[in-house]
Length: 501
Ligand code: NAP
Image (tube, rainbow, N blue to C red; front, top):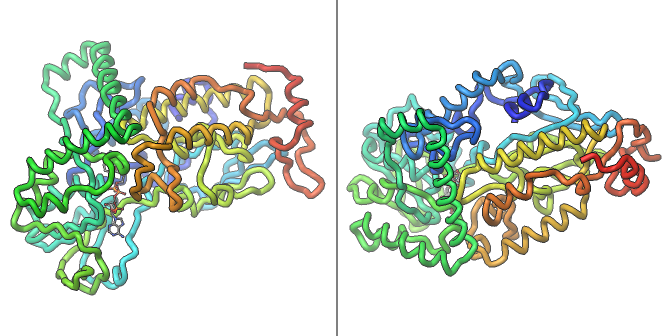
């Protein structure tokens, strides 16, 4: 976002960052084995190809190094205020400004407010009775205790998602004993990973065209994965392949059974690994599928009454991925003091995952229903950034104080999403962070990512209500900001300015 703002000639922006360094996911997740499950040449910016990726799937530290390098290359550091956790953002309709306050008391007034908060950074600590009373070492996968030596320890690992399947194979050879607590078996396919040979890296360095073709090929291959996701009968074929893979890796039929998921493949994220299943052939590793009922001072107890003494618990239990949880320490108030999280009580919704009615000039990155289960999220983020930069230019060009997405547009957009989500693997009856309690999918873009790119390519001004800069009477007789979405006069008045796009 910052790079593209600068390229667009917009230099007056600040980045408020809660941490002391850039990097997000790749700053926080440093556990052993941590790597991206999207190919490196695709999990990087289209405008900043990197010929030097060591592997098809880069380890976390290479991605973090890439982010740090670009932060310096584009001279972004002067724009960043580190250790500035945002606590409050209030929109003033009179001024057309967002008033943003951080935890340490800093205040920023901005015409536009971009939420680049991302959904996977607030650790989910499971609600298991007695967990607080555990006297041994305990840490979450995203807060790995690198100074704690796991050598010779009895380890409990809870969860079998994308993080756990990466660190479990690294912990198993160190631990005296490793108990892996699985609530739901994940679908896992082999990871087509390998290191890039020196001559390949040299070719990528010499020929950006070749690198782009490689990237394009990876993109097309990944896009094809949508087909089984959107068509459950096709997913059955993929399930067969995945089941063959479990059989190939695991010797014991009972274990094989426990490791085989009971939901349609793709309903939760499909994981990639070449060394996870094999871990369970080791004599020091146990797969526990009985539910955890209690944690005692030095042990864990399962439903069947078995108590397992352990030295350390590793929580591979994921994150609070619902914005109503991970944004709950940030109060965002739009027109008329409307609270974003209250507004989202029935479910988070945003037009193209970017704009929310009643919250003018607020733009989201990786907003509702723009996550991907099959391709690179960077592709979606670049689409959103391009759209937001266009919005900012339009605000300038139309001399508008603010733009507010039309409610009817969002309603139609959501109806379309719901329709496309029908009869996909996500509605086949599994529970994951993609869906909320009532089963509504709030996280995933249903379909090809190039369709999202097409939808966000050009901002249609008619999808927004525009409030001109010279409009002063923005407060109604109760002292509240008037909502332009319901103000027919304003809409008509602004139309007279003509379509400037
Ligand atoms: P996750 O996918 O949400 O997995 C959390 C795991 O913890 C699940 O197995 C879950 O079981 C289990 N769990 C949660 N609460 C539990 C409880 N109370 N008792 C027992 N088990 C419990 O989290 P993650 O592995 O940290 O991954 C987060 C996201 O990042 C995922 O989308 C993942 O694919 C992604 N990721 C990506 C990469 C990458 O390479 N790009 C790497 C790592 C992670 P249930 O399934 O039964 O809920």
